[in-house]
Image (cartoon, rainbow, N blue to C red):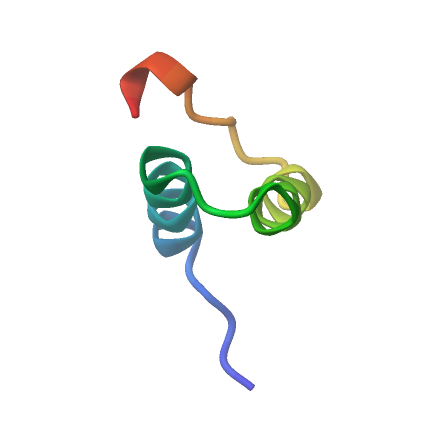
Length: 46
């Protein structure tokens, strides 16, 4: 199965926050961002 690129993962996280999606989904995205050691986008930049 293809892996989501880092850029798309960060876009998905920003969109999930902006749209107010389920906390569990946002937590899953945040966990993957951390696993990849990517900088977590600031909430105010969303």
